[in-house]
Image (cartoon, rainbow, N blue to C red):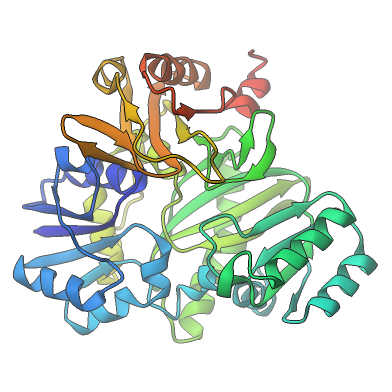
Length: 426
């Protein structure tokens, strides 16, 4: 079958690499893609916000399945428009994608269907929000209700920081996404990204990972879209995975079906794990980036079969299989990220880095300028490595980073620290 992947980042590069291995695949396209995707697929200059153009392209190339990478097209209803045209889509409908598109909707949903999460309030008025924050005190979490490219969350450790977050969101720091905000209890513990696949009625666990959101080593500085990840996290035992499925994923899939919006696609539950068990921080309706780069490096078997099963409403009767190895991804970002960055800085050493054992270099925000690959955004590369354990995977990933010649970039040097600390490593 012919398949189209929507998106342009390292997530889409990782998906393309995995889908390209499937015996079910005939032709693979990525829109708009990047220079990394071009090695295994045909990049297509489509504006993925233009759903009519996406549908027309699918018809012209006999596309049977569209795999949506980023969240924005899903929240905008691309799955609905594809379904109306008779084209299968891996990704939830507009109604189901509200689990990510509105943090307030997701919190109300959790309350209705008994999904464990922190207490919260929703606000459209700045004065009321500030009064609540002052009465509640810090630490506290302030979130823009809508999509904000992973940056609309402030974990405020002081009252002043919380007040500033409320003020900046209502002042338009995140545009329309901050017209309403959610203020919620601070949850302490260990964060885990948990992924499950759903066909609308049934769900199966996929994999888990741990992300590193803060820009600085030691988890310091502002939140980003993610500076690295590793999979599997040692904290995610089989018993804990079963509990997450029972307490969070299954009620969510059942609740969305009850609401008349069956959830088809990948359900990404951002969790906080403490002594009381898992609590939901937030839902995402697509694969996480950079988590999926690490997760798919461990996948054994045919990813396309499972994506197709979700889209058709008929998941395979078996669970996906993964290697026992650890995969670790280090994000290389342009200097200045998550603020303003300089684009167009040349990157050398990509081939040398990719030749190291167990290493793959995934393109996130690059473009080709003549014969040279140059940066084209904030998070630019995802350097991923497999190893027998997290220590070996980390060593291989940073050996690859050190082969790159890119003065315009930087990375955290402590990705995987929590798992290594658990092992007593250094």
